[in-house]
Length: 471
Image 1 (cartoon, helix red, strand yellow):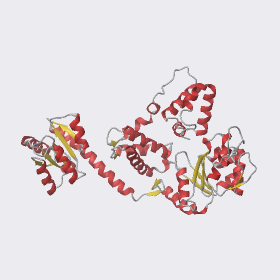
Image 2 (cartoon, rainbow, N blue to C red):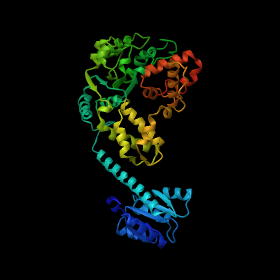
Image 3 (tube, rainbow, N blue to C red):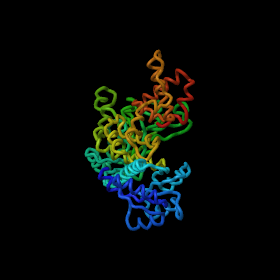
Image 4 (cartoon, helix red, strand yellow):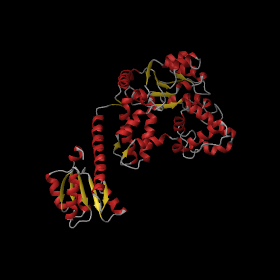
């Protein structure tokens, strides 16, 4: 027996003297510090004098039974670890004991070795709970900027930059891989600006068909095009006085880039189909996951617009370059989804955390959050270990009904099945589907349009729910 177990204080509560003596002798030989009580009231008196790391109590006892004892103990010592013993084992008794706060239950007759195994398991969970609480206490001193959680040195420098540039009103271009938190940075810039009490409007340029993007940005008047049954403001007017965040700005067609440049230079726009000029006051923040200098050199993005957008550049590091933030983020997301789903999960054990830290996280913070969310949904116990995350890497478990196709199938057909299966798995949420498949929303939308045109019968699947669901 290890010295660690020798420090564990266990109170055995049972009205059968023989049981008390057997456990006193057997567990004592294994190194536990054992005290015994012949009933619930005696146990409460002993605990008032000296605490115990764990209470092992019978359910069926004369006088105060185990349930009554557990309820009273919970009132006095809410965090007390308790294991229940019963010779009348049943699902109902186990459920009742656990609902009252017992960690686990053991059915009599039980061997000392079995009791030792259950005690070790209980203490492992108790220790993890204490470590988790200590970690959460330490996390109170972390940097939390808006909804961005980090302690990485580079991220803290970005926080300082946000504080500095937020009040200026200058255009900001945020660059970084998908899932690094570009919109969170944009929201933080708005929150700490002089426009914080006005609107923050976010729009993903890649999620809007090219034919509709101009109207979405600048609005339109009645009759401007087929289906325009009335006047409609664009997002620039909607964000007037506030902040407009254009995500994936690099996806904007060249013909619209010149019109955007005019709005930024003159503060004026024209709705589609109108000659009237509308004046707007908007602080523009944009983002991209591409190398904008390369986009300019290749002629895909206007040089003058790039300079107008890139007044204040902010580049977010990928998660693999801020490994020290992974435990912090994992704990943050665990707390978020445990509360949201009302689950009882104490934490992530050391092996599980090592596994999370070892991953490259090509999808960055968004992928880590999705992984923690899925692990919470699928958890079967109060602790997440490495096995809680590893199976989630397999597409078969994510896509469910996707199967390896026959050998004579074309690559295009295989790609189509993969895309449609993923879309179905994520309930037609195109943003998540694109993330999982590591493609842009624009690419996904174009693929879906191809499938719909080739087989109109697929429209029921592709267009399920709201149009552009999740975009």
